[in-house]
Amino acid sequence: MNTRIKAVRNALGMTQEEFAKRIGVKRNTIATYEMGRSTPSDAGITLICREFNINETWLRTGSGDMFLPKSDNAIDALVKEYHLSEASKALLITFCELDEADQDLILNFVTKAAQNIKTMSGIAAAEAAYMEALGFVRSTESSALSSTEETETSKKDLLNDAEA
Image (cartoon, rainbow, N blue to C red):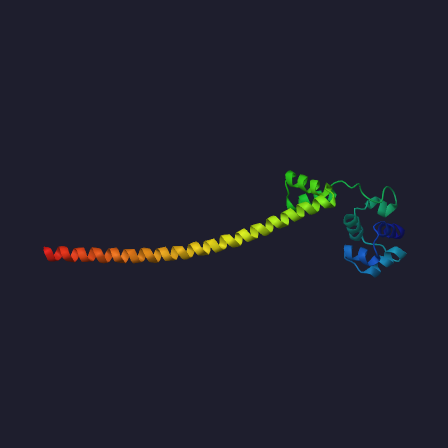
């Protein structure tokens, strides 16, 4: 297994340090695996296979292909983890299939849209504060009107009482 772990790391173009970091172990642990001084636990083997899309049978025995077929494993994992719909999955696949320039166009569009929404939210908050201030002024005006109306009514009542 030691030569196969090294073959995986080399196929991925990774240093022992990078490989170790990805699976959460120290560099010297990878070195001991590659030298045949120790063997990863079953959990360690599963982690290597899952992290790097390695065929576990190949890693354990050397039979079969090193890598599992590159289907939508990563996307399927995201769909499962985040409970995404089929439409969301299709969107992810489509985005991943775009060339880098088209992906950048979409990312720039989404970034600008988010900035505009944030700006609009700021404007909406300012408008709300303004309206609240107007509402306060209006309610003060209404209170003033009510007081004036009450005063006028009171004056009429007094005049009516005086005439009677």
